Image (cartoon, rainbow, N blue to C red; front, side, top):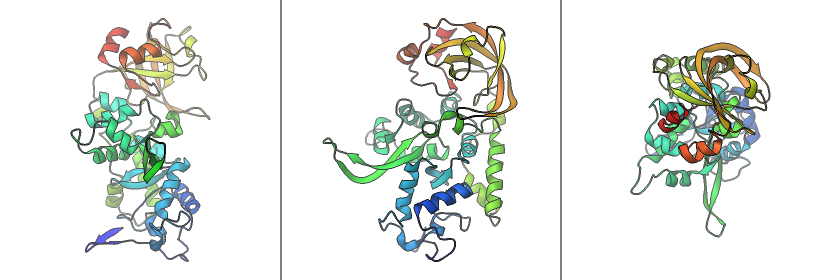
Length: 371
């Protein structure tokens, strides 16, 4: 889509063109086949949904043929991630390629770690805090609850777009809002969610074991393979959005984390009975010298161990329906805690920790208590 002398021009193909996508299922199949696709025309010729559909059907309102309607169907399908992923504009990423984009765009940081390392803005933090307790939320409610709007914070659209570009948020669905009587009204609006909520933390972060540069290189080479005409500068522009380099991240001082352990999959309760040091799944952003407090999930639901990270980036390849591991770290036991000391209830009520789905930093008050 391009603005020429004040007129919006749509690019595309005829219905009878062999490259034409005729249905939303055609579009889903094509996105899964090539891995990722911008919604609208960009600098790489042919690399968009717009350029593979009939221009006259856009915004016709018929979900059978209208690509604008398809984006809503695709977002709610759960098969493909949708959001403002490309040059601050909308696009699609298949589940297969999502972990590559997550590692590349986040530079290996979960949001909590990004905030702890002072690489996230206060406005971003106010939005992401909402998703600690909400699996999904309407865009207008995010804006209101994060304090944006009249008399409050400015630049909501820019902040939420950046969070999508970094893959911390995506669009789960488009829905009408409800009034006080429970009646639907108005246009459908975006419903945001974290990718981890939709597809699971282990899957979404499954490329964390490689460097962000390696993930970015894999994406770049894939584009070259499917669109050989794309230049290096065109690809770089489309994929821009990664954070700081891994080298600068590893130059920081040691820090403290809480990491989750699920006793359903590993007997963490007895892991240190016969050894002071064990191998553990590599945590995003964690480096040698860091301290990790191991939170054991239900039925324990409490912090049980304090450990020092003695080694990281140990190559490992494991995957099943519950877990994917691409690298290990070694953790050395320093201290044990009674199961009734730092329970989930205590962490939530006293220290404001509402969820422990992956490695996350801790507050100064909790750090002092754990010591």
